[in-house]
Amino acid sequence: MAWRLFVSKTLNLIFPHSLPNSNSLKISPFSTSFLVTKLPKKLRKKRKKPSPRTRPIQTDSVRVPHFESILNRDSYFKFLIKTKEFLSKQPERILRLDDAGKFHRELGFPRGRKVIKSIQRHPLIFEVYRHTDNKMWLGFTEFAEQLLEEERSMMDTMEMDRVNKVRKLLMISKEKKIPLSKIYHNRLLFGIPEDFRDRVAKYPDYFRTVVENDGKRVLELVKWDPILAVSELERQFIGNEDKVMKAFKFPIKYGKDLGFDEIDTRKLNLLNTLPLVSPYSDGWKLDMWSLEAEKYRLGIAHEFLSLTLEKRASIHHIVEFKEEFSLTRRTYEMLKKQPRTFYLAGTEMNWAVFLKDAYDENGALIDKDPQLVFNEKLFKFAQMQEGEVVSGAGEK
Image (cartoon, rainbow, N blue to C red):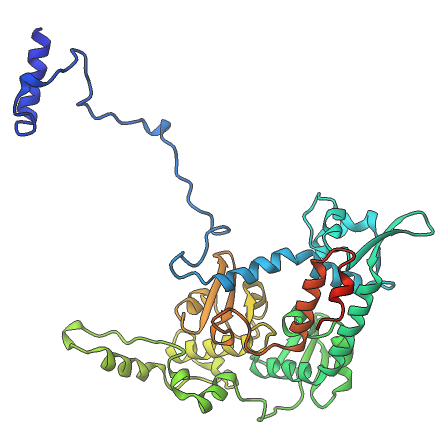
């Protein structure tokens, strides 16, 4: 009884207003509910911080689903794209099934997995058959061979366009030369055919192949073309000056006591924004951390993306050309500061950058290259099952 009275009086001292009538409370003689308990650090659950490999760049409030879905599509068709490229380079366009595991990276399927599961997802494109040597082989179906022939014909008609793309890449490079291996590794990005390294010999007025001291084969620009030395931004500026002026933002810091309104602020920021620096200039000579140098690098990034088929590129593509285009290790931060023009999708360690203005409000490219039209048709057939080809083969 004495303990109950002691507890009641103690609570009255601690909470005099919240307990107006302490006699009305029924408190257990051994109640410890008023004590604050704390778990020792050893027993607390540690919150795992999201890894940069999985942490999305964009928050839910600003994420654009159609850009993110393009990356998901790439992941779904990874095996299709890589296996198609790998088999196309083989002498007879076939591969022994037992050897597929050795080339899991080249074929685009996880190490240790059975390749047959990936093959079965695309029955109209790939087939497995037993050869006369009693071994199982992987190859293209007859229908896929027809598609490949169509693609080769399309690439022949687009050859001059691809030649000009490579000329423009050389013209925006620092020393007007790029290793042939880099162009080859990124050929799908620009729609360049697999045998481009052989085709350049047909254009001695444009290209020269040089073997450097380390044995590396480098493609050099032979002649500067002022007609090609016009960036996509400059073309847009002629037709829509206001649009280009809003493409990038370089805000000027000023005191709030100046009392600028929105219109005054925009005019002030334009003093920093204009003039832009052409990617076809010698901007790499500018002070690396100056505003003009940043404008130059943004121009390089914009022009590089404009030359790609889908007006987008991954971090791996950009890093590969880092030296040739005088890009810095802060390219990610530079692009992220310009959300009006660029959209960064994916995760912090595996991101892709899109040219926003190249897509409509539904996420479709405004201007589609013939190679993209072919790719879309290939993706459609790759998702079909046997028996559906008759109704879908005639569609363009």
